[in-house]
Amino acid sequence: GKLELIRDLRQQGFRLDTIKDMLENTPEGAWSEYSLISGLFSTTFFTVEAPKRKALSEMASHWATPATPEQKERLSQNGLYRRVGPDEVEILSPALERIGIQLAELHVPLDTVLDLQDTLIEHTRVIAKAYVEQLFLSLAKDVAAKAESTGGKATDGSVVEPLKALFERLRPLAIGSISAAFPVVLQQEFDRSIQKQRKLRD
Image (cartoon, rainbow, N blue to C red):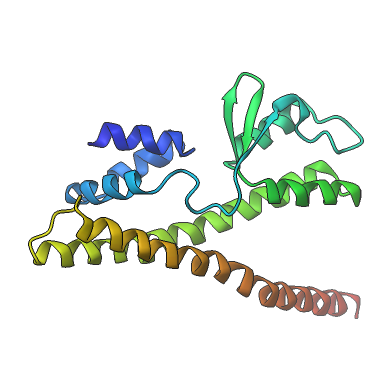
């Protein structure tokens, strides 16, 4: 039911306002499919490495100047960390933390890294939402519909196993598409910025 799904989404790190938006914009009949999908895939299905626990007091400890309470709060609220205790968080992307550490070694200010991280999350969340709605859920509905047309039920093997196999194949394609497109777009934006600076100088 909805209450169980809300609980699952909260455990996965979704904020209440996001869940409220989902509730308001989801047709009543779709909740059984969402519940099935939520039950099938753990909170770490789409991640490529296991979360790492760390004391909140150690967050941003690689910068020469200790992080302010405001900076620590920004770190713990951006969706890449999950509070698991009063002074402990789960880092959901240890790889991104390692990139942050290397930026600290290059003397990039913490506020700059936080601004970049916020931008990264904002835009990748839009992409992820599109992939979920247009690809994952759309194909999941097709699998469920095909099973029902042959007399199957949403919870039996005729839906569960094909859905798992489908999502296993889709996961690396969705993740890989971001890393495949980004270098091209990065080059284009770099070239565009250089041309803009030349025009301003001339």
